[in-house]
Length: 202
Image (cartoon, rainbow, N blue to C red; front, side, top):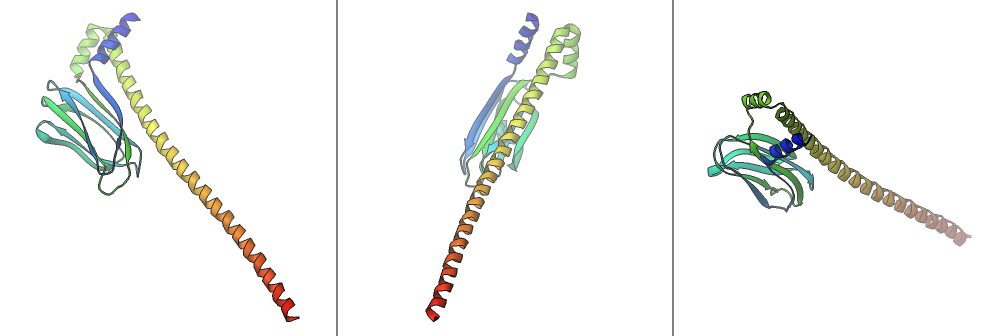
């Protein structure tokens, strides 16, 4: 058991991961960077808008020499995995577009790790069965983490919708009650005026 834990921590140490939450102000552009020291590194990039506006944001992923890799407008979330073909700095930028005046909370994850090729995995499995199990466990944990982030994003958005609906229902009920009271007062004054007019004629 101890040997498995040692292998697991050794495998996880090969990956360089960053998970952040950032408020992007209106008309702001925020960029974050990851360094690939050798070609063949696998880079995964995940983001999801947690709060603000229509839960959408513009994004760009640039490689070395300002080479555009991915770009999207008004996206709610994204999940990309690509291989760094060049050594250098990779930029991950978010832009809160010109059409909005609302700050937005973005959660994103950037991971740089060695790309495990099928033949390498086969060699490792033959050489060490425990290492193969550790790789499987690490992959499953990564998938579980992605599912947890996805469901947390959905929970935040649904909670925001419920809060907004609750506020609208409360204001509608208050307005309806005010209208009922106002109509009752008008009816009382109308009836009172009617009987007062009849007495004056007599």
